[in-house]
Length: 57
Image (cartoon, rainbow, N blue to C red; front, top):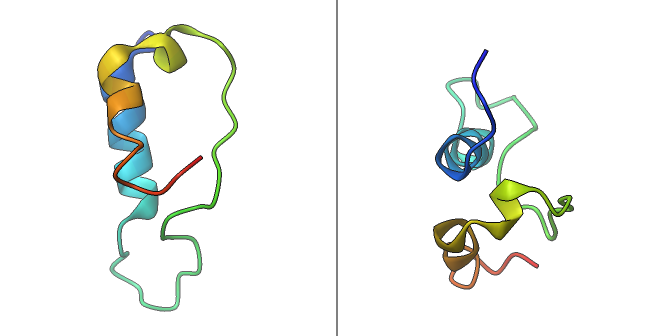
């Protein structure tokens, strides 16, 4: 099992938000907001730097 890190979290979010092979699949796109705990991912500097240009809160 892998530990929690910002690179894996960003990859997960990228995969969740990108278009899927099936155009009928409803779960994709940018959310309005992402709720996170105060763990090591939320504290990672480059993880936080990726949000300002996305429009996420």
